[in-house]
Image (cartoon, rainbow, N blue to C red):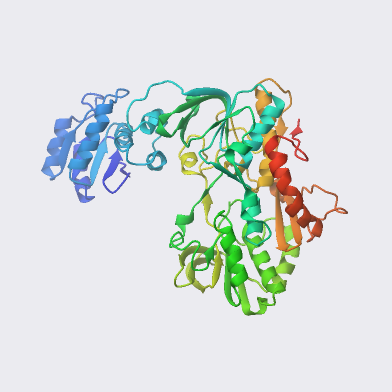
Length: 554
């Protein structure tokens, strides 16, 4: 007997036997629901035998039989009524547990988010892909018709999605391409570090989604709830179905603010800020300008995160402002990093350490932020020692810049496209899905072990576009991604350490060292970040113009 807990009210199990009632009673169960018809197998006890054993132990027993493959909408409604009325907690079972958990998902489809239901089922070891469309339809059997069909469907209208759509149309203008994204606004997120330092105006990082979706591409303004890769279908909110010949998945990642206790209640107040949110980056600059003395804390969670250098960029630019204003001697700067190194590519660390020394920043490695008390101006960290032991560390702050933990979006993590870590499971060279040959992924959500940056997406988009065209028979040579990513580390206002690297930390500089040596802080790199990269983003990358980003074909 292997019991899987779904909620405080219900657990599911494969077939139970009369003698199991003793253990179930001891485990605290009060009701049993049998979803297996009698006579399915020779070794199966009858519902009457099970009811007799349950009653002898004071357990309420209900028989709601469901024939495999013939689960009706009414079955789900009855199951929901049983859960509402029976003493709880209850255990539901069938031959494997699949029918029981399917009934639970359908019964709760109108009251709980689809990813939450699929996630609970997945955690219990059950795959609900066969009924995902019914769950998305509020637990009712949907009409098996697609709302629309396209040659290529792109999930996500961020940097990766728009760039990929443009690169596709640059190669094959007649393709039917759709981009699915519910957002009205498209953001230039690499600019938010500069907003937080008073260099960029927040408005300069914003365009409407309608302005960036390429001409000839259909924008479907909706949220994706699930995937049916076996049916070449994407399920949207409201159980709308979009079919595809080829699929590209690039919805970005999820900023998990709620994972830090107390954080959501105090963001944007009490000296608590983050450049990882558009509306908070201006508050960062407000805090930096107003701080005259005290403790300034900058945090970095465990990898992976998008733009791994952004947490320390905020620290450098803030400290540089205090240094120039003559305030730094009265401000204690602390960088609390859940990891064990300042930067993952060792070649760039010496230059960064010079600035750590200049700003007298205290490096606190293996310190993971777990809670924030905004009104009390206290941050709490879990510190991990070399022997694996942990302790809670309290730190007082006058200003704290928080980088939130990050993960794949819920609808990705619970989907059949995800690997065990929740990322879209792709080959790191071709960016093609390892299981479904007509699916590709790029940007922050894919499993390739590259830095999650806009520069990486700029390189990946033409590669995915090229390889889709090869798959369609329009091109002959596959493109291969080398893991390129770039992180312009803004160490002071006017100078940047331009980190450019690929898989395994291999340096992949875009310029000869006599023009720009990325291992050293340079004004040229700052000029590139401040003046050149924003127009390249808006007018080249998002328009399918692959300047210095042409794919490597083999």
